[in-house]
Length: 313
Ligand code: NAP
Image 1 (cartoon, rainbow, N blue to C red):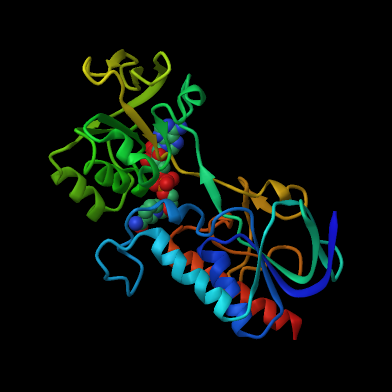
Image 2: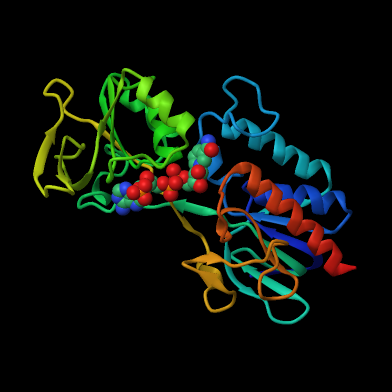
């Protein structure tokens, strides 16, 4: 394995909104900064079709990906180095922290963890078997495969309702399956969904099992109040339907188990993004917080970078 002998002032883990904002602020403060991302920039927001509540965002149809493209250009503009690598281990003790990746080991004086979160599985039988064969977790990626077909969305939060509306542009009908009889999503988002003639609701319901030969063509759902089971089958002509899961997120924090303080997998910080180890900060969705939005992620990233600068001083 290569060892990078450069010592960075700041290493940022993750290229979502929190990590990019940290990269912008640290680079702009002339700190020697490296941003490590394993795949594409953007994290979960790059799968969002439309952003309409980011302050200043009035452009009709701005997608997560286009916003992220501009943020990542800004990172480079301010001199932050970027590398694509997969983190295997982090050594956080002592003044110099080490980030051991597949291709190299990187060293830094401060570390900003912005590793984000990933979608939670729906948790029904057969789910794994039908991923990519009817089951998806990304409307932007897969909606066009379901042009003219029936689609079911699982969940009742902002993601489920917003993505159901996007899917309704493609699908014949979108049915939202929610385990309660009230949505968690913001009221303004709910109102739009209730007005959409292509969106229906199956309340108090969970999916028990998905069926099909090759492609997803049937499922068993259960009413959680009555425990009654119902079979839902694809229209005969279609032979298949889609199920999109938007049941929340799981923090990407397994690298820090036993090393940093956590609460249900989320990294615990104070309001200045400090973890329990001096010089180590957490920002964005991986952090324990009450509001997970792009606007709070970028705010976390900015605060973490400025705190890193203060620590280095
Ligand atoms: P979320 O708010 O955690 O909602 C998850 C939904 O899935 C809830 O309705 C939950 O039901 C349901 N659920 C959880 N586990 C389930 C299971 N095993 N089976 C069936 N249903 C299950 O997640 P999210 O919608 O992905 O949003 C995550 C964060 O991003 C939130 O803070 C949200 O506000 C934010 N967000 C904001 C926007 C926006 O502002 N435009 C857009 C997307 C996301 P219960 O309600 O019964 O718990």
